[in-house]
Amino acid sequence: MDTIKTLAGIKDSRAVEPLIELLSDKDHNIRSGAINALSGFIDKRPVPFLLKIMSDKNEPADIRLLIMSALRQIDPAQWTKNIVLLVEDPSPEIRREAIRGISTLQDPSIITLLLKCLMDKDKEVGREVVLALGNYKDNKVVDQLITILKSSTEEKDIRIAAINSLARIRDER
Image (tube, rainbow, N blue to C red; front, top):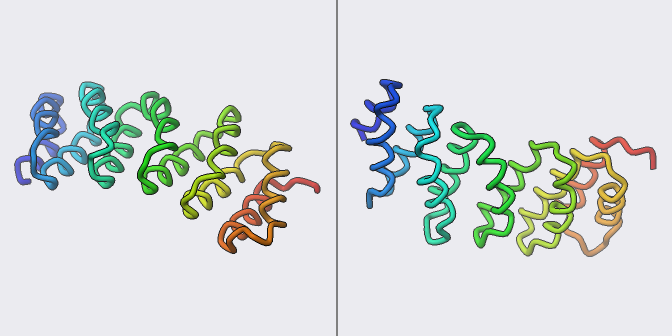
């Protein structure tokens, strides 16, 4: 770990290659440290390696979450392109973080994807989707949030999230 801290601390692009090599280390802490260190460099060389690890469903969720964060720093365009794919990930933690990330995009083309994600079986993912929808002043969004709010079968936390989202949208209805 001291080696990783040293490599990260020098902020020299020559440190990127050795850090990339550490991504394949069997030790979880070494890999985590390498990912964190790489996020401090604006260098796109690690991106293909990070994407490969992130797409491996057998990787621990915490490693994949670190990669999501690192990609956002290193290559925002790749992060944006790949974050959308993660809303269907088997891991609820990954799906939740993907929704949180998508909510920052403020891209109206994402609305259909978010509405689809409302059907997620994980209630925390559903809550994140409802909160993310509060970023879009769109009739379909408002209608769906009102439906959620009026639903007697929807969980309390999700209904409260719908209230918060509707308040942010400030629709006249």
